[in-house]
Length: 323
Image 1 (spheres, rainbow, N blue to C red):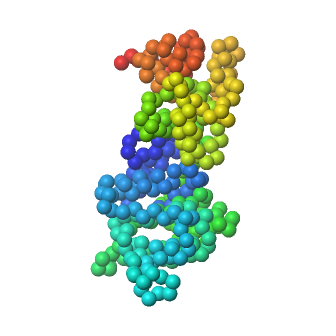
Image 2: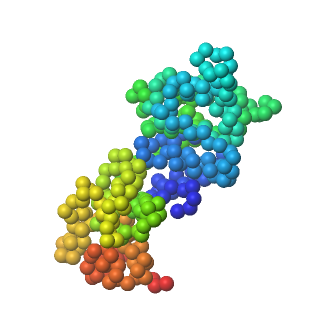
Image 3: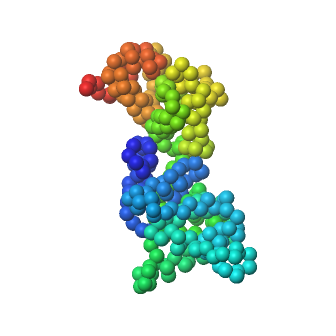
């Protein structure tokens, strides 16, 4: 994975990575839509990082709206003004001023009250005048908002002000699909989170067998990547003897891959659904490469019979090329 790119090989992730690159080169405002835990703030930070070319002096102001008090939000957006009732004695610049050249990120707008959203509408209304090139010092600033559903849907559900929906309709949009709709990305995310957890704990990476991957792929992941990462972190901590150990609540008697391999071995044969087929192809191919196409070692690692592995590799159209 390249820096500032999402992990995965699904069509959706490839498209989002293109959008991250394209939108980072434009000062236009952005709306990121996705369920909780899909990585909306990560995408926003990637866009900012690419847009400023790694210049850490150019700020991104991350406003986690559900954690900010109402009076504090108003002061953050519009600044403290001296001698204003309810404000501190000292003055403070508004968000737009202190974020010159950078990014203002407002997270989970649809989860805030309509009063909060009215403040955001007022903030957005001020920006065209501040950005006007005819000004002596026009403001350079990108705004990125995140919400968990389409604006029209949130308006219908009375979770988003119609005035705010009208403001953000012209924003560039990035839709991040839930993890359950891009299961082929899960093995890559698992590998990434395992490596990350092991590096933090300063321990060796455990071996992950194909059955564990199948169990992870077929979970509903209601809280998306956030939930997957939490499970992987727990699994790494409780792994022993060099083997990856899933939490007990995720382990069933026989995973789908195990049943599939037994079906192939007994000659009963059945068509595999496309997503699982893609996942299994990637797993077997990467395992063969890892062991320099030594079928015996690869089969032992995957927990399957060597002949079964050979037959499955041929069936999946994998090319055996030794380096």
